[in-house]
Image 1 (cartoon, rainbow, N blue to C red):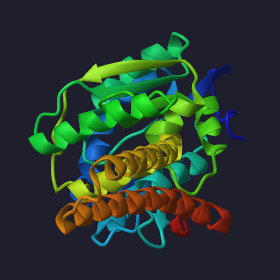
Image 2 (cartoon, rainbow, N blue to C red):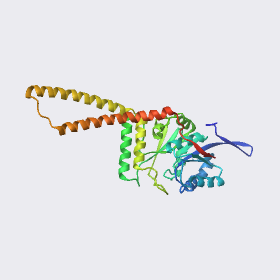
Image 3 (cartoon, one colour):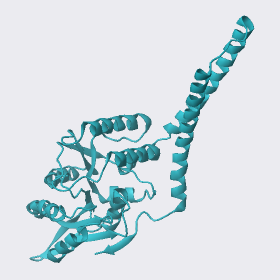
Image 4 (cartoon, rainbow, N blue to C red):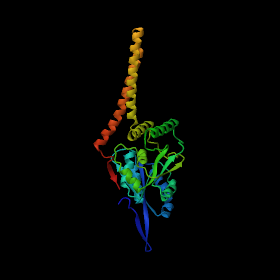
Length: 326
């Protein structure tokens, strides 16, 4: 049963309780990093033995087009602690994280990226905080070394905006790299929404979290799968999922324009009675029409985004489909 995954080994007539640590690694076209990640993770073998931790390494293949699955198979032949859950197509990292939490049975679960930007060397320190009583230990980058300046600027702006318009606490520089107890993992699984924004979900479920800071580590091999456009769409997902402020903004803008229109009508009537009917130019009228029309379309776009997310939720489609599981 999940949460009761302790393994009992009989050694010289005594019973040793071994806790299970599940390592969930979402992968998309990461064939170059699969073995490197495995080697880096199990450099901590002495720590795992000292803390009486059994380890299961679960790669979640998000519909990779390269040889990611083949590389995992090779590792599986050498080490039974390695597992794979492969999707039928690319469903996205959020689906991969959810699938990984569902598949694992560990007393503790840690989410990590395959590109080694989440240093496995931090695991001993993270586990120490879990032993001190924290429910989860999360990581955040204090630098953005290696990122384009424009991306760093917009990332910081996103976190500022989110924390102003949402009640959910989302920490600037937060990574998905997080060690959590089974209780926290099950709480995240209880949120079965189709449109997922994990950083917001982590904040929403609560629990006592310790934040661990570290300097940014550049990916070892390959290229990032996150373009500026994909990050922008992902940020929109977060705003819509954890804030209704944009809807309020649309309503406020509509009310302001109604008040402004009423004031202008009064001004025009008074001006006409006092000075006669002035000749107005069509350029200013065209600008006003275009401006008001643009605002209307913007507000409709906000409503459309919320409506589209609702549409996808009520369909009740599965979050992911499995092609291969071992």
